Picture 1: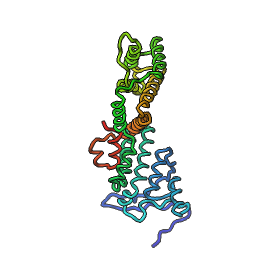
Picture 2: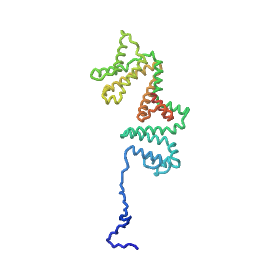
Picture 3: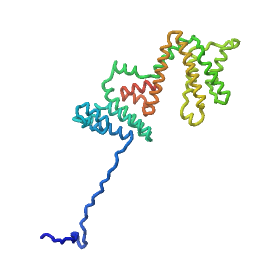
Picture 4: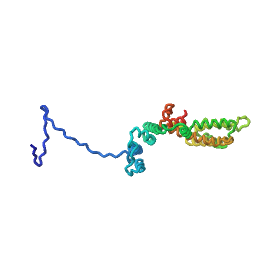
Length: 322
């Protein structure tokens, strides 16, 4: 028989007895719905772009642009996983997915997560090498390897030119004015540097006939150039610890380096190797920049990394020979 209630009366809770103890039927509790803004910033945006690539969508301009290229309009990209297994999607999309993760890693490194950033950057670049390394080999791989800046290859060019120009004197036309200015700054309170002091002594001795000084030939000048470059490219830690040159002295050290480089190029031109020398200098500089980037990405692997990662291994061996 149905229970009857009068208007205004509240229905009584049903009573149940378990043994001798009464129990009240639990009432369901509804959770409050909350609204929360989506995370903002470059890292979440890159994560959304990765999700657009992998699973499809139009969260970012990447997904929307790919969707329009597919003829899907504003529906967004269909996704790499559309119609294939996740494993196949990861393999076939290794290049864009890997590069996206590497970019995210770099962004993480600059937004307060250097360790996670290095891991994601390294893993992303490894992932990006999956598909190319599966298909590249023989002449193709060798051609790409030749296009990668290499400190080792540039060093071989320097050594070859030095052997050919072992008796070619280097005239310090561009070096001396800059070196003299460096010495002036030192005499006026600037911190000295041993390579600069030794270079000044060597060039000064070479101008005194009575001392019968040996010619300042190309190989010796190259050795001085290497040490002067170390002074001009002062490590950041040394600067922070206050043990290096002050900015003014550091800039002048760079001027000395540039002057000596110009004089070495002029000397190489006497044997028809100025272009080779200039190209080797550019390759060495570019390889050094790439090396720093790879170290920052945590990719200073050894032979095992080179063996396992195909083309990426070739890159690591080319730019980080030691």
